[in-house]
Image (tube, rainbow, N blue to C red; front, side, top):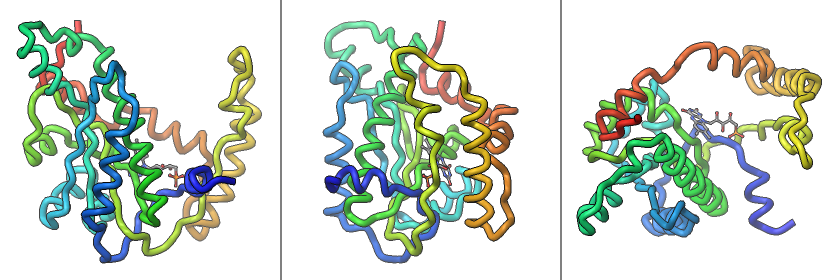
Amino acid sequence: MNKLYETLLNHRSIRSYTDQPVSEQELNLIINSVQAAPSSINGQQVSVISVQDRETKEKIAELTGNQPWVAHAPVFLLFCADFFRAKIAAELNGENLAITESLESILVGATDVGLAMGNAIAVAESLGLGIVPIGGARNKPLELIELLGIPEYVFPVSGLVVGHPADLSAKKPRLPQKAIWHKERYDTDLEGLIKEYDQTISTYMKKRTNGKETRGWSQEISSFYNHIYYTEVRQMLEQQGYDFK
Ligand SMILES: Cc1cc2nc3c(=O)[nH]c(=O)nc-3n(C[C@H](O)[C@H](O)[C@H](O)COP(=O)(O)O)c2cc1C
């Protein structure tokens, strides 16, 4: 197995960190990897805001839904989809910016962010650092935008906590490969595989939480997807200048 593959397969989210800082050099490597990612039309629709100030991290921990690891870890990186530079480019060329009137902008921005964050995670983990992504960045996005001075046409997609792991959580098992790899045509015969995975996750969670958490995967995700859990997303996009027809 090569080193990269080993790093990727060894991933687990870390929610407990030591006080050891992340060096400027390590951060530089992470950000270099963000910029090295492919991007739609080379538009480079990603910006990262790094936060190390203790008080700001504490505020972000609260805004992301009281997630203590956001405050405790030395670095919080906010990954944003960014069409602000595209707006400047349009002005420089006397053009209209129409992309922000289409949902396509959200797909472009979120895809670019996903690829960039994937690189950042791989590099951070290859350096022995731990990470956890923070979708909670969309919990109170209007306040987060205000706090970090985020301009129009830029919106937070996800945070990424980075630090030195205090302990390594157990690696979380994934769905059976057959449930996600469809050969030639999509195979909708998934119920049995999902039931099988429910058992796997239930056993894993029981062990990880000393019997406190026993739910399977389908129960867990159903309890998220039975309501709109981040309610300010549309308002955030409208405020930032997105106007979908
Ligand atoms: C986009 C994204 C957002 C996430 N948001 C959060 C979050 O707000 N808080 C958290 O503790 N974990 C968050 N996670 C971590 C997932 O819960 C975690 O990746 C998943 O349970 C699989 O576990 P693993 O990363 O340990 O393999 C997020 C992951 C992703 C990819």
